[in-house]
Length: 315
Ligand SMILES: [Zn+2]
Ligand SMILES: [Zn+2]
Image 1 (cartoon, rainbow, N blue to C red):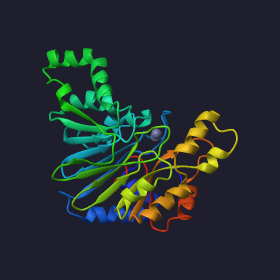
Image 2: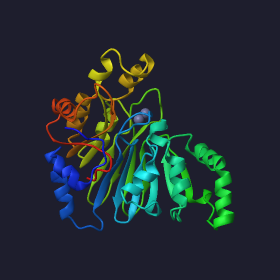
Image 3: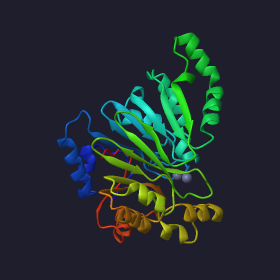
Image 4: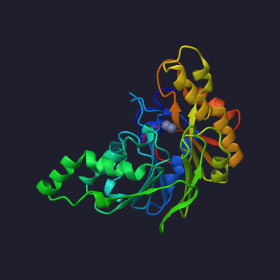
């Protein structure tokens, strides 16, 4: 199947027949009451920092009624929100899984650009160190524009609208009347503070793995969850000679991420209701696994429902 990484409308996606499981999820979603039903929108599903022609960088939105909760801020996340028709002014909290640039390059621009799109109430941002320092330095880096728009356009100060909270330990990190967020340390060497998040709402439990190799902590966090969104790499691809990345990068990929067969093991061990693949490495180029190949690898270890994630897919 082709076109997994192109932007798809619901109609396009249904027409591809890419996954009957995804079709079933769409149908179920459409039938439910709209107001408080928890929505999961995959904003970016490609992995790694290299800019891609066919895919956006990692980010997920969990939407409960008129509130948006964001997990990871890959490059271009502000525009992906716009494409998904999720207003930045509805943003309530941001959760960064770890401080690799493919997961945080859009963090500063999200606020800098979202500010001009009507962001008016403070947003809590959670993530590993150095989140607080990064936030301060990003505000300093764009001080010229921020000061100018405050004086010239009458905009409110930006700094009070971002409330960074650094997390270094697992456990419940956020709760309001619609969602509870729990963090678990995953396994993404050499980064010490790298997290998976579980978001529980009244009607759904969604786990985002972050970047990790097979992790018992992720299995525990995801136990019985409705949805597990898990990163994936192809060991077969990276073990073949002649890959586009230098050997040191290939070593990192193989040591710090999860092969598709093992992603299936995580889903099976956690007994999740739906497995969603994301953060494909590789995403594009010669030798990249086809949709059928990704799916076949996962199927070796997981017999439940699987969706091949793609940008702007809503589940
Ligand atoms: Zn990554
Ligand atoms: Zn990473």
